[in-house]
Image 1 (spheres, rainbow, N blue to C red):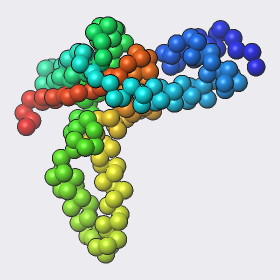
Image 2: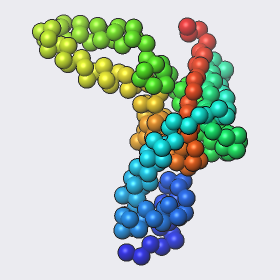
Image 3: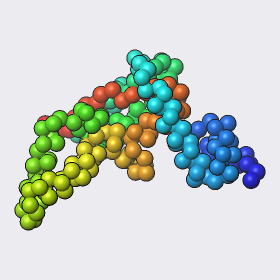
Image 4: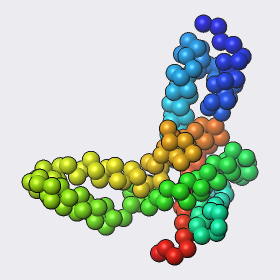
Length: 198
């Protein structure tokens, strides 16, 4: 199938990938737009994995204040160079992450950052619910494993569905910006403040 410039433009608009990458992806997938999108996303994962070990000593601190000033978020997003730190796409990514944190209220960035006490408390609740519904202790504990995994995914920033596009997780979004910018990018830390909340 002949790859037209219109097809390349459409794929570029969907993925924000470079023109040559879009053309190559369309050639490899014989013009199938959806497969080309998937291929570019997989390549983004590969680029992110390659860059993961590199230091992110530059970056930005972005804020998001929700209408009315009762909810605010501050997030630090790191990158390797000040050139990328000043890039509009990078700054937009940082702003989107701050807005996402305000909306989704994650407990930690990665699974390792979730306090053991939070997981243990949730596990006790799930086990008690299963026992109250008539399940024996050993079955209840097996049932809880899946629920705990789901719970951790819901409170871990990188595992959460991105509020502006639930088809992507925050990790997917991070992988895409790493592939686009060509250097390691990390969400380093965040603070979420809400009036009247501890």
